[in-house]
Amino acid sequence: MLRLRRIFALATALLLPLAACEQVLDIEDPQLDPCNEYCEAVIANCTGEFTQYATFDVCLSTCESFEIGVDGVTNQNDVQCRMAQARSAAGEPPVHCPQAGPAGSSCGGDECANFCELFFDVCPSLAGETHENEAQCLDDCRNFTRVNGGNFTSNVLDGDNLQCRWYHLESATLDADTHCPHTAAISKCVGDSTFTSGAGGSTSGTGGAGGGT
Image (cartoon, rainbow, N blue to C red; front, side, top):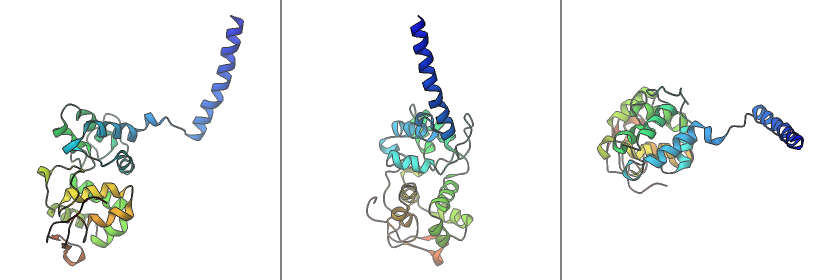
């Protein structure tokens, strides 16, 4: 018994410094990271026509642009709201998946407010060239065509519509150089279309061509 106590005491002595090091270095268990939890839920529960992110890595990089929020508060434009929707999507994907993704209007504002906020955060240079400010971006966004019943899905990769721009915008959080140019101006989501006077509303020409890069 004495020997077992000594072994236990030695093990405790070895583990305590490790715990202290984790606190000093701010090391966290990745399983407790809200973005990991959120992305695991939305990737698992929103598939096929309800897919919200092209890959898990795109989800993680997009999530980093959101505020974390407060657990239990489910009406703000943050991770906690989207996580609640992603978990509920296990039972009703058509209802909750569009709200669990980056465009979710149930999570504060509306899809255009969420789009413009992320656009100016992820592609600031292009956003500034294309729109005078976020208010102008909102006007342009509300003029874009919607497909898929107006619901966001990352499966829409081309055509002059908002969903295509969303696909490239979330992908731009991982690869801005490749995807930012496809969110506005002449891009895979616009084809021959341009913005009026370099800003303003879209003057739709032919639809975009090509898939995701």
